[in-house]
Image 1 (cartoon, rainbow, N blue to C red):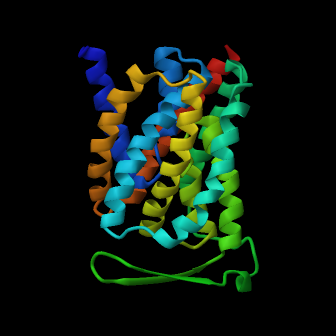
Image 2: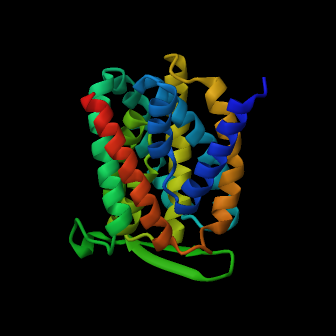
Length: 269
């Protein structure tokens, strides 16, 4: 039934989906504390419902980024299988969380996210330069040829770890995977956004399916926000190359920091 709560969820999903797609960061870091703090969900229900919304958001975003040629589809396919272990086993690990432990762990993650979004800078190499031997070439919608070197083996290892992280905490993983692609693997920013979206789409679909079988996906909350997120994905992908990303990230970092503090206080109480 249509009501004010449904409209509120739709509009909230629209806003978060726009921001999440524009920055390529996903939106689980907003969904999970939103469900916990506003609606009193259990951690498991908050994670499962969040992943369902993320799936619809990243599916729509991936389609837009693909047609705009803002993704390295070959790299995404190479890393796709690496997201599956975390997507399959992460939900079973999350069942062991209680509310206090989850609040502490998630607030710590949010503090790290806020720090990266505010202070994130240049990249670094975890392996010797010679190990970055995979030469990637992408031609965008404007005909510009973008080339870079990366390490597929490091990409697989990092994606496995991030796949676990995203499905245990319901954050989708973009908030970690985007910095990993850009800072560690050397993927150009706009290509990293679309590539990460494709991987998150696969990971969140598998994770949502498992959480749904466990009874941890609240459809009546998920669908209004998912519909808003789908529309937000189209808007966010269009805005991704037009808005000053640095200013937006700093503003969002402050919001994330406030939510982290609130989650931490909830853990103590």
